[in-house]
Image (cartoon, rainbow, N blue to C red; front, side, top):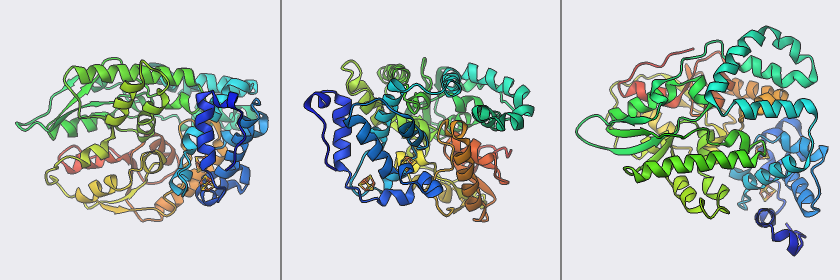
Length: 433
Ligand code: SF4
Ligand code: SF4
């Protein structure tokens, strides 16, 4: 694609990066066919190609974001299916990230939208605030139907509907410390991301991961001072907050490396994994962090990616359960991890079925199911229909956002992949909710 940025514009490294990305796009439109919002809404401006044109126009003319571009960029799920499909290697993720920062800096959203976003950014990345908010949500749940009828309150209604009825207690295993590997043979040393929302919604995911890893002889470190990866605010264009989270985690993991070495930083939420693997890019312009962040990104592994690299023993039991594996967008498109979770499940004795339209997002996408509840529900229902058509007995996936989203409509139980693997390798059977 031809671009017309001035030399002065290109002196801004963010613009220069976006210009490089824009020049790779050849307008072929292959990406439109796999874009969930184009498939749902049928509007070119809600396709990757349409959004690329809108972003190009906004950046090239150096103008503030307007209502039209905000509408279409807000509808983008950042699912990155377009990046998997694109034959030209267009890095849509970095382009839309830049556009979101530009929107945040130049566009004044309506008051209700500003308040919703400020509240999400204040609450979600902090487990204690999130836990308190979920308790409050229980009181508001009876009013969700009423709020849904008022346009400005639809995000609040969506939040209340997604809030779980049972809020688990905080896990002691999430506290900083070291969980020693069992057995005589030491199989490695890893740090695990405690994160934010997942540690509140289902602390059992990391507990299970730590239990399985230590049984396999891997030492697991929960480093002091690590926290939210920053993805939630990053996708809202709040770059200052996202980079602050990234720097804090880079410091925490760098200390862990210095204090005993790490083979990997293991992540059990693929949405977080995609962002942490991008820390090297996000902090490339910060001389104090660029190298450290690149090292952290190079160490980041999804739990299934890490397990697949180990010499695993034979499973203790082979359950034979039929599992529909839902590949989160951040897993298949963001991290290009497609094989390992299915192979691990099959090797552990599960019968793995893949739903039709597996490339399409379930509509969760971080805070998307709160901020865009209509499109999100359409995508969720389509996903659930495809999953249930597999005839599976249980749904497995590797991202807490997808678990919450799919569980809100599916008749089948939804569990994290690690819980099924742990069961097969001698752990407790997963609790079905
Ligand atoms: S990230 Fe997903 S929703 Fe956004 S343009 Fe690409 S395919 Fe469409
Ligand atoms: S598939 Fe790639 S090159 Fe083709 S229009 Fe989409 S982003 Fe551009």
